Image 1: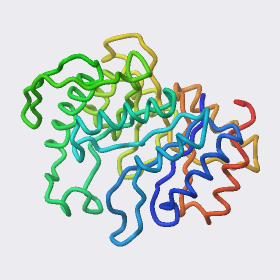
Image 2 (image 1 turned 90 degrees about the vertical axis):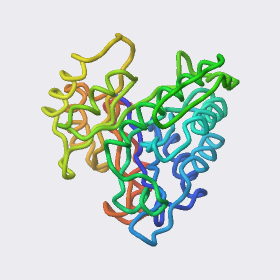
Image 3 (image 1 turned 180 degrees about the vertical axis):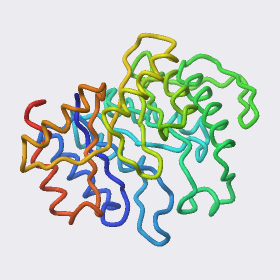
Length: 280
């Protein structure tokens, strides 16, 4: 199991310089990744930092940790623009980028405030088309596409991604909804959430992984994430909790670092304490 940080870059965490400092502390403390949320708006008037700009700064300030958006709502983006930005960050980070994707939501007006479609069905269709466009352009070969939402005529984007066969794509989904997990099975990983903010149990992961396994089309590496919280001052608790998820098939524990959990300095101390010692 690997260990990363999941940071919503809003409110007091919107400062990109502070996010860079946290990423450096995370790398020094033995964490394996730093992942940022991707929203346009948060609770109306809260400050929000740009995810991709902050990830670029983190890539320049670190050497080892994985990094990426967790998750980027592809329907909010032009997929060719997202494809280009991802390849550039992949090269800048020497192949450390992971692209987390999903449909997002309109809980805070991320779509409706900007006169974009708000229904999940449309977003799901745009996500599937967007991923086809992104990976087609990543091939580095002339690429054309004719879809309902996106059309491309003989476009060639170079350079190719440094990470081969492609930048890893992890797909978000709300369990037990099945369609997002059929989609995830076609890619490189899954970022599950529970419906109505339910915390998924190891048993839930066994069920969803059995479902994904049924729909996998290749035997390549496949990552499974869990967003959770451990007590850094209690190594036995942290190890026991994360081990139960590792046994269920989770490959990445994403430690939630956010304001509703505790004050900023308390959260930075949790980062400095590092991941559970059993896995170091």
